[in-house]
Image 1 (cartoon, one colour):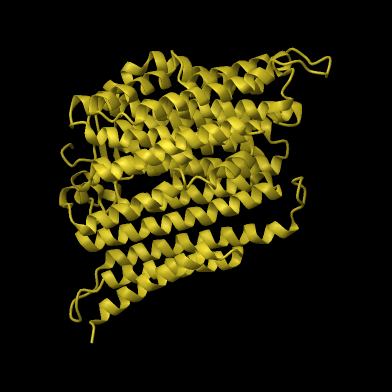
Image 2: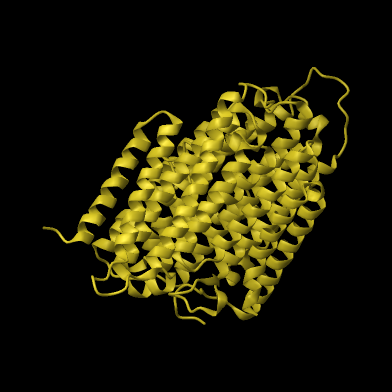
Length: 98
Length: 485
């Protein structure tokens, strides 16, 4: 049986690879945004795993702080991407008028 | 006086919030903040020239747990360029956006962009670099979409998704480094780094992420539509400053942090990609039908030159000869920043006055807009690399270093790239001086042409003639190697 933190770390890497592949392969904008979020979650999972310092020791706080910041960045980026996707169908081809 | 480091970040940040709250006052507030930012940058330049590198531990927390701001010659020089270009683009933008709502949004986004860029240039911590890079990309995407047209929105969305992929790859590299060395402070990392697999994998991930962001061939495909479809003042800033930010990070990481783990083969690979970017970008610029698309492809080519310096820098022994080549690299980045922003602002003037920027239909521009035509010519001088521009000196040094290190491959690439640059610049001027069927165009100098003119003169004359000072400036030492206080 593998140690827990290895399982978590490998899962994170796996999520990242799945997300990255989908982001490169998918054509639909919404699918791509979701894929990027999956890949991002994978990296956050790796970060959280890094904080583990054994069952008896307190976890390292630095990776947790970094993940919190990373989540804020990811949420903002996703919001911006979704706003752009929503605006697209309503925008005519040539001129910039709504 | 290390508190000076916070002002170039804090002033535009507060200004961006203020313009968001009072969009009606956006023009005066924005201009005042841009001026104040320039003042803060100028103060930084003066104090740096006097005292050398500066370090500020934010909140009094020592680097490692806290985050440090650091300033050395490279970051201060780029920061000074950013404030100057920003002020010029801002002055131009006061008259560019007719709709007060759009103008308000432009100013708050633009000031936030400036804050993010300056924070990036002063960051001494890898995770802080990631956050500022992401902040910069988000604001740049919003600015790209500001025009509101479908092409602009599509370009912005592509810019965002590609940029996010790049930053995720970068973030994975950051994670690996933290796992391997337990710190993200650049100086701490530089001290701990060994040439071993974890460093190589992390460096590859960080570099690939940054190459996407800095649009190195063949990862450049998102840049031309984004830069060509954004409003002119935004294009100027994106091309002159935002792509340079990612390149700055490549330089910072390669030579200040990863120096022991670097291999000549990796640098050669980036150099070859840079050479391909020079050839491909210049060729596409020559074939471009619109002036702004030409300028965008020219940016792809000019970034290629910057990357061609990497194998040369690595092959040169640390010391005077490497410092000379490094100065030339910074000079090239600065000259391109000023020249390209001048070109985009000039293209904006033409687009607004003539209603289009199709190169084939530029006939009569030289008579109707003599100052703008002069700007295009001056910017062309700096893009081609004719004397007395800074680019001339930089390319001269590039060739000298290539001969010194025996890397002959770069000589024909620089030659062909320069000829192609001459061809695309003279193609624009040829059409601009051509005849026009429209009669009665007014011969006048518009106030909106002045910022572009000043930028072009800076690129061509000021940087060329004042270049010697830049090398002395860069030689004042670095705050990133852990040796200085």
